[in-house]
Length: 395
Ligand code: PHB
Image 1 (tube, rainbow, N blue to C red):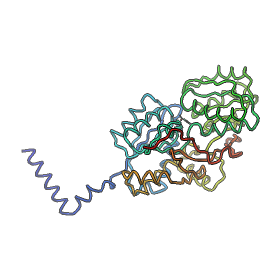
Image 2: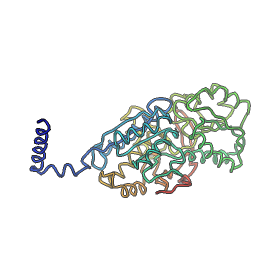
Image 3: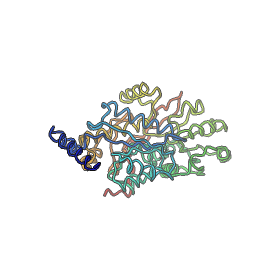
Image 4: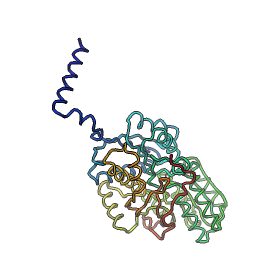
């Protein structure tokens, strides 16, 4: 009796809808449904601030276009990945299999990115990397559906090593966290610095995200290098800068780094950061109309100053908008979507950039020095720098 009533009710509903002419178009037009955007970012731990800045920038880009993507409303799904590689596949699968997102934006940590990369390659879901630099994501493990809007780990330090060698810095100690981002930053540094005649006298490291730097700083003092070069980021970077100064090294041994060291941490680090020289694809002090306008709008929206992570999130939004507009919101039109994203020129606050064939930004790397709570630009460390993309075969 119940099932018969149900059948009757259903067919009446279908008949009613069909007779008004609404039924077929509504079901057929999948594009009318909301576009599902998954954000997989760290919202806790040493990279928490980075995740928030990326989300802010991403949302701001989309809100500037009326809050839609290719004419479609958006529904957001969020996961805190905790910068924990052991949970990465499970977290990415939640967004892709359970929530069925149309696009996955993530993440910050290179180890977690490896899990996302696997899920992206297995499922074919569109994946935009707003930070994590793990080289292989746009080298041997590249994929047509994965685009990076940030950098590869070797990019900034390759530019840094060249500058340090040119400056005549002879003996350097390298220090970083022991995981892909630290290791690959070191590789980029080593390649250009040693090619320029520099000598790396010691490579020091500690596990991510530890911040007990004391013993390592004592070792640096004993080694007496001409300079120290490093990769640290987020909360750990602020502590490293403070501890370096507190150990009495600041005025004795110049500190260099990939520019993440001084991003989003200048308030927390205070005067201890003055004089640190870094290389990065952005600087808060870039005096271009585009950057000025971006910084004012971001500060107004979020009551805080943007950093490189906010820019990368913003550019992820710009790239997605460009792709979604090209296919009028139908992200299942993959060849047209990928083509549009591959050929985009992103008018970023960092300066205009394009995609390499392996889907990594081709971009300028700025040389910066911290002065009065700002990363002042003192030159271009590398012009239109592309990652090698070694081993990338798009299939
Ligand atoms: C990374 O793990 O790839 C990573 C994290 C933070 C950064 C840069 C790279 O600032």
